[in-house]
Image (cartoon, rainbow, N blue to C red; front, side):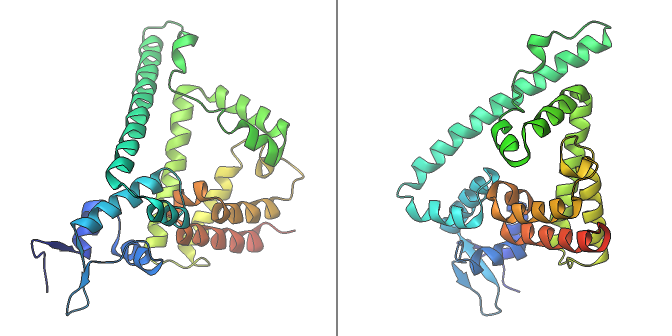
Length: 260
């Protein structure tokens, strides 16, 4: 087996270092985003230092919510990679500061609760901005949907919000694992995830899934299509391929279980 030569690295090592999979790296090559610097005589793909810099940019842009086509456009138009990376570092520092404020805010709330006092409202939401998608939610599902979901979110409190976020993150992680494992959309594993996804949607007041009399089948199917169409959502599921996997699994589940 060929190994690292000192000038480049084999695909499995790059996948391990980057926290991704060989399958993902091969997909990046297939869509013209990241070609290996060379292919060994045994068919192994190898990546040099320039490839690693490009992969870092891809992963950074993916974390911003860009889909692979958009990432390709960004990279194609970049003339100064170092300048682009400096700009991204500035954004990451802003995010770090925002997260630090969130942590400090929640820690102050915990301290106040443990001491039996009342949390100071002006200190509780530093670093939070759950209203950033207000206009979009109202446009998609109406003002009542936003009002109800906003009241529900505020009513959860810091502990409930953290628990709900972790449940959401766990579901996304499991979708990604299933896709990377090559599960089929109509298979048992994917259909269990689809069931969990629909169950999760019913916990949010104001959404059609949580509203009696709504066409939940059409909502779930349409939501799956949105995961593919909107790069911000698709990025949660590893990009277009993963988003399509979720969409197809939800469509199968809706057809089998939601009637209509």
